[in-house]
Amino acid sequence: MQKNATGAQAPTETKAVKLPWTRQDTTWMLSLFGTAVGAGILFLPINAGMGGFWPLVVMAILIGPMTYLAHRGLSRFVCSSKIEGSDITQVVEEHFGKGAGKAITLLYFFAIYPIVLIYGVGITNVVDSFMVNQLGMESLPRWILSGVLILGMMSVMIAGEKLMLKVTQFLVYPLVAILAFMSLYLIPNWNTSALEQIPAAGDFLGTIWLTIPVLIFAFNHSPAISQFAVSQKRDHGVNASRKADVILRNTSLMLVGFVMLFVFSCVLSLTPAQLAEAKAQNLPILSYLANAHDSAFVTYFAPLIAFIAIVSSFFGHYLGASEGMRGLIVKQYESAGKEVNEAGVNKFILGFMFITIWGVAIINPSILGMIEALGGPIIAAILYLMPMYAVYKVPALKQYRGRVSNIFVIIAGLLSMTAILFGLLG
Image 1 (spheres, rainbow, N blue to C red):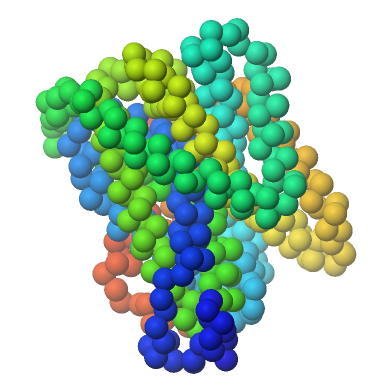
Image 2 (cartoon, one colour):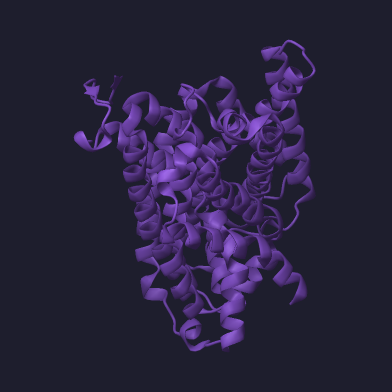
């Protein structure tokens, strides 16, 4: 028998045990929340708001079920492994074989890696905008500023997972509090310009379709799901999926509550023209608000929220990208019959990550363009479609077949992957 989080023996029948909410569950909920609240959320009001207020209402209704059901599917997939301590790259190989294991591990890496690149661009732009607009300083050379910031974030990762988790937990609490306060603080500045913009039916549906990849990106916490599921299996044994479902449901409710309030508040306090200007400047919504607002509170706290959100989310995504890259390298070594040099692999990953994140931060590509073209569609493939394929392919998941929720997740994933084609045609 397995031991659960309280130290009691977990029975083999999943229905025979009560799983009370624990402090560890709260920690996981906050960690998953912190992983999701990053660049996507800071750019979501811009992309979603430019299409008007009413499509945003539909998105708010859809994103809760989309987020919960997709992450629940991925968590159940990892929990389905018969091998103790298996992460997502190992579970894929267990269920689909070595060839498919390599392919999906590669996809998993490319679902998360572009997000890490986005954070390099985002953190550089946030700090540069704050220095110039709030502190009245001259811009530092971009290669120096980006290098220092990226090195600072990566040094926390190098120092070890325990320090990273402490820093993340330390950042999430003020992030939740200030995000909620900022949403309420902007209410007196709400205007009706967004409500008056009612698009035609075709434009309405097109706006929702094009925004789905950014929505998926903004609420994505899949990089932490692998280790989250491994932890639930270790603590709850056969009841791991049940416990994980509850934590993921509460995380999704927390995300939708805090994030959509923030998005609505930002969209209603700015005009569509201002949102378009923020997109053109490649700035998070909070940095734009700081530059456009007269309030000292917004001017100084908005960039702070943006900074905290990006840093806290960077850690979770960096872990996921590193996990994916390590899986690829190890699988390649094993295929060639060579012994894995863990120290050498870790050094290579560190060097590769720093150089590529730094290089993209210097180039400064459009963040929303990267999200629409890379982040959303690839995340949809690994988070929405792969677990649903596994449900109908893997015997260990057959109990989840034939559910309406599966069809909903598959449609959402396909819409995200095809949105880029719709955008090109439009």
